[in-house]
Amino acid sequence: MTLFSPPDCPMSHAVRFVLHEKAIVSEVEFYDPNNPPEELLELNPTGVSPTLVERDLVLYDSRIIMEYLDERFPHPPLHQMDPVSRANARMIIKRIDQDWYPLLTEIIETGDKKSGKAKKQLRDNLIAATPVFADRPFFMSEEFSLIDCAIAPLMWRLPSLGIDVATASQAIGNYAQRIFNRPAFKSSLSDAEKELAELPK
Image 1 (cartoon, helix red, strand yellow):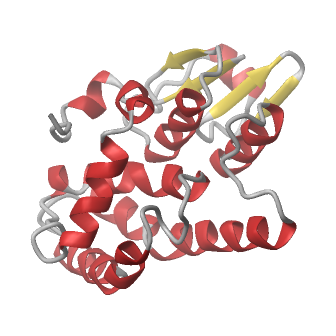
Image 2 (image 1 turned 90 degrees about the vertical axis):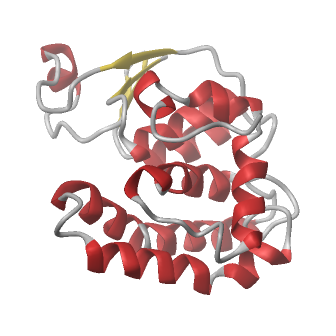
């Protein structure tokens, strides 16, 4: 099993987090998304990252890859077992992808000077979700799940983008520390990602 991953891609980071949570033996091939290797383009002509290759299987949507890994390697489970809970978790991840990640992408792509509005909106959206972060140890769950794997890369990148939510919301700060303290999260970081923030001591 090989994961092709840019070293600083949030979506790829989420997949790497799942790989480490499940202790899946795999090889991570880091590459420059502006100059993808020929081998990758032959497998995935779209160039969308990340790309997972296992024998004849090629997957290249991070959320599909995360679901596949959870089903392919069922222990420990990162989805609840009943269909209703799994469907609700998928809807939450979809909302995160629709509401928070486009703002993160805009901030990263437009640069510091042009992203003030997006930064404020992302900060305000996260702080508005404080009751959800405060309600349970993990995001809308008593147990660590794929939802947390989806949120973690976004939370990790906030300090490097000048977005401080922990000061305004202790619940969000505590949640982030619980996630960042997980050994699998620490192992999932690329060298480039380690430079974005400081791990808890």
